[in-house]
Image (cartoon, rainbow, N blue to C red; front, top):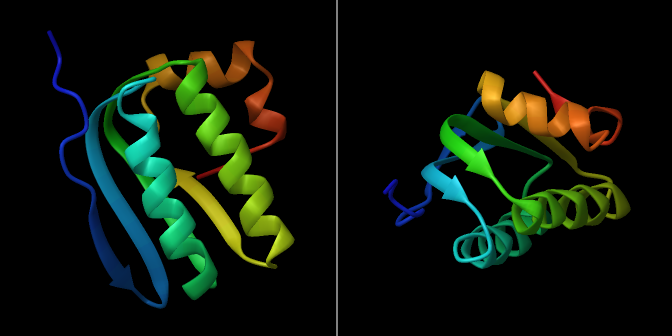
Amino acid sequence: MEAAITEIKRAKVSGVDILYFKGKLDEDTSPKLQETLLEVIPSSEKVTLDFSEISYISSAGLRVLLLSKKYATSLGKTLTLTNVSTEVMKVFEVTNYLDILTIN
């Protein structure tokens, strides 16, 4: 069984707040990410979520991303995802999130 998100690390690189986390983004772990994003987004112009160690995302995780993207946009902030795995990218494709999210 894959580990749930246990820790979210935050780094600031060239004025961008980058959040690093690993594991599965599901109904058990997405509240922790949402809480962190609600704290980080207002104080940052740009936030990047590093998905390099996220292997799975459920509808609960998708919901957090959607709400966080809308929240960032309403504040004039930028929310970007990077290093998204092929498996997670397939979920974004099937759910049409590629049209909603900014992914590098």
